[in-house]
Amino acid sequence: MRLARRTALGMLGAALMPVHAQARSLTIAAASDLRFALDETMRAFRAMHADARIEVVYGSSGKLATQIRHGAPFDVFLSADREFADALHRNGFAAGAPRLYARGHLVAWSTDASLGRLPLADLVRDVRVRRFAIANPEHAPYGRRAVEALRSQGQWDAVQPKLVFGENIAQAVQFVQTGAAQAGLVALSLVLAPALAGEGAYTGVPEAWHSPLEQSMVVTRRAMDNALAHAFVAHLESPAARATLARFGFAPPGEGPR
Image 1 (spheres, rainbow, N blue to C red):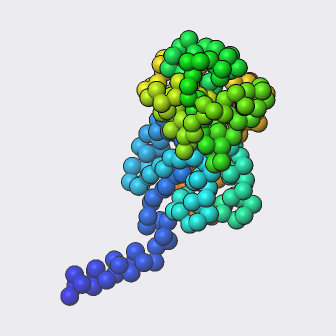
Image 2 (cartoon, helix red, strand yellow):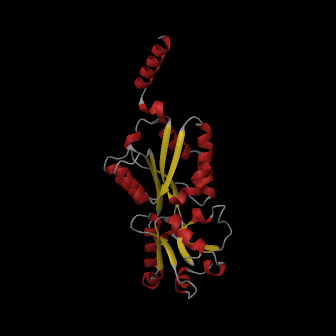
C-alpha cells in the first residue's frame, strides 16, 4: 500500500512539472551546409547537457521551413539564409526575430583540380563538364544563389542543358564527389569538411555575383519556453562555436562581402 502511495505521488509530481522540464530534449532543424561544422560544435554542447536528448535533422532550408509550418516538432531552425527564418517569424511560427549566426560562401568545385581552378565561364563551357550540379533553387538557398551567380555572369543559357539538381546542397556536393557531375556550385563549408578537404580544387564565387547568404536562426514557437533551445542559440553565438564555423569557411555575422 505504501509502495502504491509513493508511486501515485511520484506520478502526480511528474504531471505537475512543466513539459519542457520533464523532457530535457532538443530537436534542431539545420541547413545541409552545416552538416560537418555543426556536428563538431554540437560535441561541446552535448557534453554540457549530457542528460538531454538532442537530435539534429539536416535538409534544405525551404523544406525544413515548410515542415515547421505544418507542425514538425523542431525547436530551433538554422536556415542557410535569412528569408526562410524571416517568413517563419512574420507568420507567427517563431518565438522571436531571426538572429544571424554566420555568412555562407558559394564556390565552384570539381574533384578534377584542373577544372576546379577554371574561371566560372570556362568551367561551364568546358567539354569535360557534361553535368553541372547545383542545389534545387526552389527550396535551397545555395541553389538560388548559384542561379543568380550564373545569370550575373551570362552563363545561365550555356549551363542549363548540363544542370543536375540536388535536393539540398549536400546532395549537390555528393553528385560531384561521385562523378555524377563533373563540377558544380556548392557550399564552401562542405568542400572544407575533412572527408573532402584537398579533393580536387575550388574557386570562390564573389558575393557581388549574388545576394548574400545571411545564415539565420530562430527558436520556434513551440519551443518558446524550452530553456535548452535558448541555451543552444547562446552556444552557437559563443566565441568557441564561431571559431569552429570559421574553420569551415563561414564568416562571422556582419562581415562585409568577399
